[in-house]
Picture 1 (tube, rainbow, N blue to C red):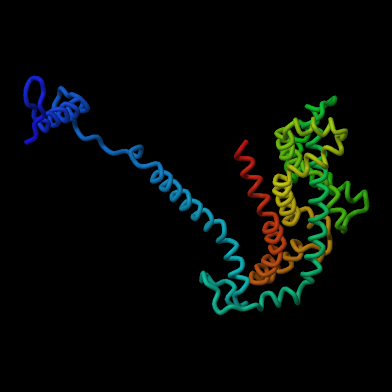
Picture 2: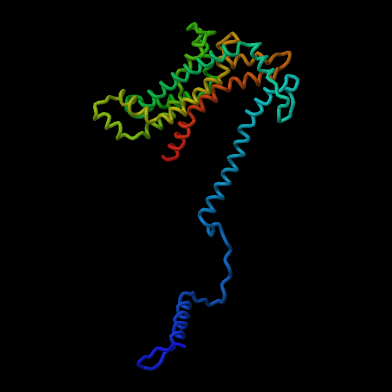
Length: 319
C-alpha cells in the first residue's frame, strides 16, 4: 500500500482515488425520486441517420419498381404479341414461344409501312418545329414585355388550351377545306402550328430566368431578339428538350385529325394501322407489329434527349 507523507500524516492515495471516482459518478447520475426509471421504447428517431435514410430509399425503390413494371408491361405485351406466330396471336402466354417475324412480314407486304413512316416523320417534325418556335417567341413576349392587352392574351391562351379538340374540329375542317388543303399533310400541320401548352410551359421558365443576365446582355449592346437566341435559349436547353419530346410524341400519335383530313389510308402510319381492323376480322398480330415499328422513332428521340429531360426535372426541383 502506497503512502504519501503530508503535514498531517500518511495518506492512502488509492482510497482517495476511489472516493473521487465515486463522487464523480454520483454527480453525473441524475437523482430519481420514484426509484428505477422505466425503459423507454425505441423509436425511429433512435436509429442512426444512415439507417433511416437507407430504409426510406429502399421503400422508394420498391415503389418505383412496381410503378415501372405496370408502365412497361403494355409495351412488353405489344412486342410479345408482335413476335408470336399468326395462329397464336390471341394466346395469353406471357412468353411468346416459338418466336416468329411473320407478322412483320405481313405488315410490310400489305401496306407501304416505310413510306408511311417517312410521311409521319415529316409531319411530326414540321409540327414540332413550328410549335416549338411559336412557343419560344410567345412565352418570351409574355414573360419579358408589358404591352396593351397582355392579360387578355394570356387568358385566351389558357382558354384555348382548355377547350377540347372536338369543339374546334369542325371549324378547322371547314377552314382547311376552304384553303384547298384536304388530303394533304399540310392540312394536318397548318391548324396545329401553335401549342398553347408549350407557351404556358416555357412562360414559367422564362419568368424564372435570371434578369441579371438579360441586363448584362443589354449593356453589351444586344437587343431583345439577340438576347433571346444567344442568352435565353442556350440556357433553357433542358426545358426545350423536354418540350420537344412531348410535342413530337403528341404529333406522332395524333390519329383523329389526320384520319379526318387524309382520305387515303396509306399516308400516315397511324391511319395505315387501321387497315388491319376490318369487319371480317382483326389481325391483332399485324396491328401489334405495325405499332411496334411506329414506336421506334419515339424511343430514339427519347434516348438522344434523355439527359436533357433529366436535367430539366432536376432544375425544376431546385427552384
